[in-house]
Amino acid sequence: MENSIYKLIKIRYTDDKPQYPDFEISYTTLGYFSSVANAEQAIKNEIEECGNSYTFGFLIKEYVIDLIIGQATKSERNYLYDGSFWNEVYNPYLREDWGEFCGRPEEKIRFKPGDIVLHTYPLLAVLQIIKRTPPTIEQVNRIGYCPNDDMYFTIPDNATSYKGDWGTQDHADGVNLFPPRFPIGDELLKKLKEVYEKYKD
Image 1: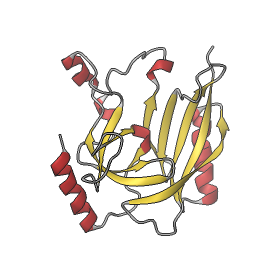
Image 2: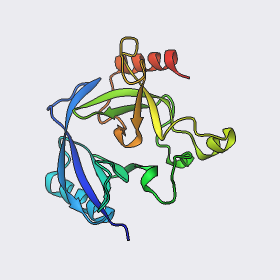
Image 3: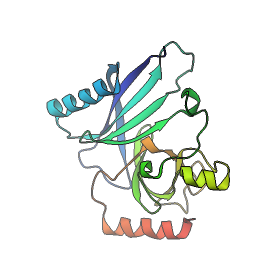
Image 4: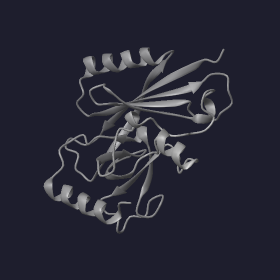
């Protein structure tokens, strides 16, 4: 029988007053747990004991025990600063019932094109806008093949000079995307919408 262990990570912002379009974040491992439920209870306990000041969010990463997979995770879940569940992604090659990514249920696509998000990197959270979502199961069935992995395409506010993974856009796993943590100023909001209109599909 396959067993998993669940790693709980807390994401914090490091400045007293984070400023968009990007700000520094840090990751702290809070512990390892035998189930998602136990890890989620630890999130609640952490918030009750420490509050959510400086808290950006949480991650739960599932690792398979006794399997040589390097650092690959079987699944990952992200949670907002208040502990509420937000999204989940799977490694299709470590799931007996998947084998390959064949689309995501429409109700599990948490953002839509034009939505503003925070894209988290190892040390930075960057304000970006959704350009393209993962394909739905219906879309994959209609065209007969999967057009891209379970990823979002995002556009930064400085897309005209930005050179990310794909030129003027980035690839992002769903668990690396969060709703904006703080209000966005009118000027930056206008700029993001202008960039989206220029680079949208």
